[in-house]
Length: 150
Image (cartoon, rainbow, N blue to C red; front, side, top):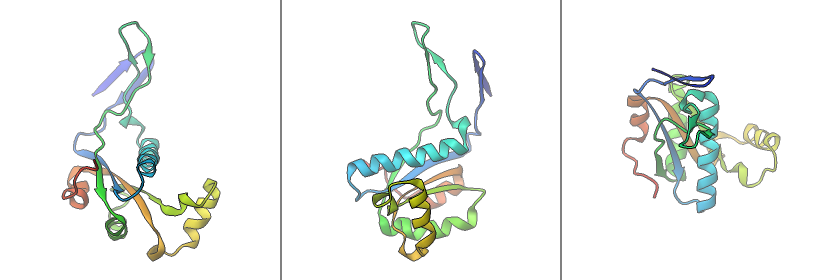
């Protein structure tokens, strides 16, 4: 289904796809919020059609589009994230996966973050969160038993 407003047209992404974030519930609230923002932006960059078209309000003012999908934020902990991240690798690229590691606490730039990531063995990575987008059945395989982060 295509929607049009002005010169902006977006095609809807198939409804059988699902987007979720799994975040370590033990992190401070500000870090949880930041993790959700970072993961969401990364998913949005790869799937720009998840963002709806521009909308006009009652006064005719044009507003930027927002996500067309609910994005549940599910609770996990560091152990769970560390356990499922390697399991997800075999399903990529059919399943889009983005993660955020604890190096964000100590690095001051993207380049430093990249250096930290390449220098740290997998078993020593500390995960703050993981974002998933793909077939609902596959996303649910990893996240179906997780509760909402509240």
